[in-house]
Structure formats: C-alpha cells, structure tokens
Amino acid sequence: MRTASALALAERLEQVDWVGSFDRTRSRVALMREFMRRSALWALETRCDEWPFFDIAGHIDPAARIDTDIVSVIGGKTGLQQPVIVDTIEWALNFAVLSDIRADLANLPSPFEPLVQMYERGGTFNLDASGHIEVDTAAIPKGSIEQALERPPLNMDEKSLNSLDER
Image 1 (cartoon, rainbow, N blue to C red):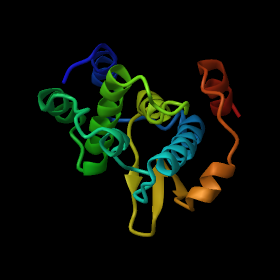
Image 2 (tube, helix red, strand yellow):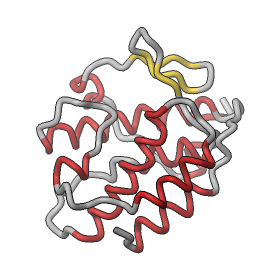
Image 3 (cartoon, rainbow, N blue to C red):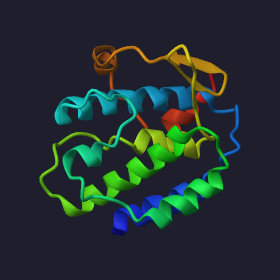
C-alpha cells in the first residue's frame, strides 16, 4: 500500500547517509532513548512484549503494509548487515500507512519519528550480544519498559538536538 505519509517518509529515508558520522552521537543517543520511550508507550497500548523493536502497525492492523518494492529500494541503499535496521524502516513505513488509513489510533506520539531522525543525523545502530544498543561508540542498556517510561519526553527540534551535540 502506498499512502502520502508513507511516501514522504520513504523519501526522507532514501536521503539518509547510512555510512554514519560520529559528530552527533549525543543527540543520536537521546533520540534512541526517546524511540525506546515511545515504543514502550505503544507496546503497552498494543499489549506487545516484543519491545523496543517491533511492527506496531502489524499489531494494530495487519493490513497496513507498505509496498515491498519501496522497502527493497531503501534497504538496498543501506548496504547494512543488521537486519533490524531494514525491519525498523519497514515498520516505520507500515506505521505511516496505518496513520493514513486509521483515524482511531491512540493519542500517543509517533513511535518511529525519533528513530528516523536518529538515522538522518548520522546513520544506524547495532545490537550487541549483551543486550546493549550501540549508537556510534555509545552502548545503551536496553533496560525495561518501565525504565523507558520513566524518561521525560525529548524535545526533538533541531536547535535542541544540536545543543546536545555542542556539549
């Protein structure tokens, strides 16, 4: 399925420099933590225990699927070995489709926007065997849903994110 929001998001994702950069690590870590907080909110809403990386749209409406050719094009540009990155791209696009076709979604913040902004600010992340999420050289413990929910929301405007990187 192709919707306006999904196509706009696909365009943003196609512009990402997947090679990465280490000059925005602090803001990228903050964005990953915000993604985990929002994912926790949606995990509770959907009663899903796959947190933090899961297909939120698939738990709400399995028919909300982005066309596979769009995912293939973007996935091909990433050149990455971590399947979870392509999965998160597909899930973000599925959620964009869902947002366009369903008016009855919970009044919760967009779950994938922090992750998309993290990608736009310098590439991807890795999952290590010890349960950490690696953003550049920073290792973030996954923690629990409860810990993620305790975090205050992140101000994600560009000025605020840039100020994190200037410290």
